[in-house]
Length: 152
Image (cartoon, rainbow, N blue to C red; front, side, top):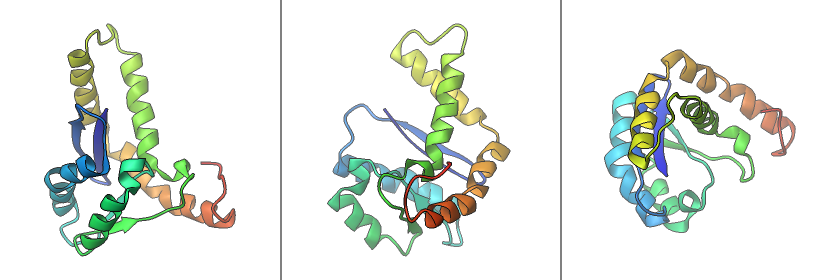
């Protein structure tokens, strides 16, 4: 399992998780990786952090801590059961597709980790920007269907 982050300007760290992710473990990742990334790419404090609705992300402890840190950056909320709003999933799918089509394929967990890190860093900024730009349309579509499924 991995934790990742990206912005308009580029990829952030790809963090290998050795154990199951809990709310507390998730919170241990944020200070070293998310906060430093956000301070670099959004030094004006106008950045928005979007996460999926995975159980550790939506845990009481994580929600409370993110609310306390809201002065560092804004946390983008959206309805549960709206995976189409999470653009990181499309990026992860593209990454998985590249890894699956690699020749020769990774044979060990360490090979897979190496390939993932290499391919993660190769995603072009314009590719990321396309997804970020799509958020206005995604939010508008979500509002039109009152939180229901959209074409995304």
